[in-house]
Image 1 (cartoon, rainbow, N blue to C red):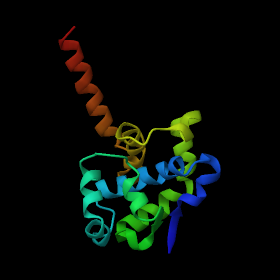
Image 2: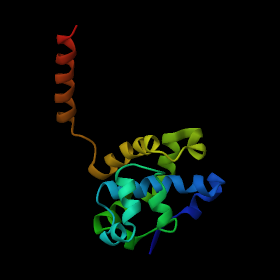
Image 3: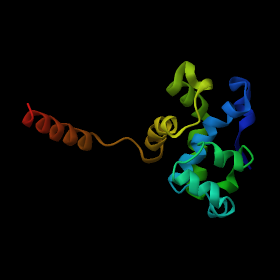
Image 4: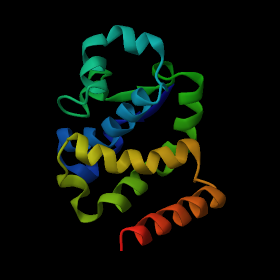
Length: 146
């Protein structure tokens, strides 16, 4: 079953290469967090290696998958993640990148911005105690250097 396709992004992007970027970021994130099926990793070994090394365009693996993301491309955990995130993913992408959303470069720097959002969706927000403890340590560290 198809979970997402470049066709959904084409009307807004107006250009096929731009339309591949949002789901290219999502697919690369799934690879980096072991959410893809082993079959995808084996069938597209060279592209997977380049993606893991963050070389070339981020959307390369998504394009290699035919610019569609199907259930069979993902592990069970990846399927659950995709079902949870993809319904609002386009809105999240546009909110993050604003008016530049459809003129974005397909690079790893931009991917990292989206990955920061996706990692919170995958693992959840840090607990208050962790952030409070970190704030205390940082404040003391900065106080030492003043």
